[in-house]
Length: 257
Image 1 (cartoon, rainbow, N blue to C red):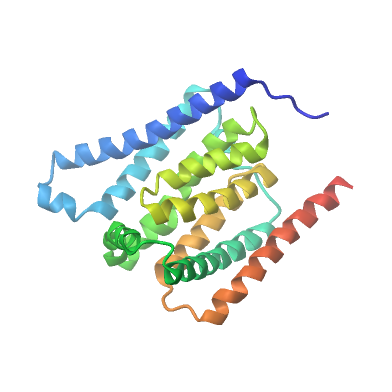
Image 2 (image 1 turned 45 degrees about the horizontal axis):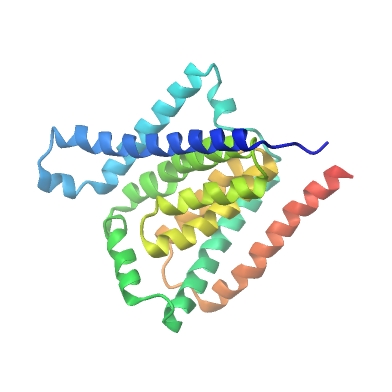
């Protein structure tokens, strides 16, 4: 029986999602404010990556408290449901392939001049601190904590709320758009929204945030530690990504028969 959605339910789900979204920013601001009480302004400017790690830790603790108050276990509230082990491998392959595919497509778009040079400069400046960070800080912030907290928020909480009250694809798009907005830069909004749609599809398909977390970790790890990807590898990444999507869909079609 097809599930019926109501405008009231959808509206309340959107409001609750925006509350989660706002809380995330409040955690970020509070973390910076508290740290600023103990360090100088000059040192604070050099601690952007460390501050990101601190705010992510605070976010996890507060989300866990929200689940506790709602009488939900962390696993249930965050949709950390088990998936067949082989799909962790699929998620890793998808994440790596997507990182190469996105780099290729964005590179080609930049070459055509469709994207202004100013957008590229904004993008480079926005991530200059991360790029200059030590490998260990990159691992903690970009590869581990960032993906876990962002997936907990955008897929586990926001998409988990939206998909119960509206068509899944609309829920995926709205959560992906919020995920894009949080990346702030024009280029970041474009590619992060696309990533949000892919990870949202994984979340809805498996009813679990775990494949999205694994995808996100694999994507960020590839971006953070790979340089000068051969053109052939980037081109081959696109059919690999398509194959993985088809493989996952085939699995679910088989279960439905």
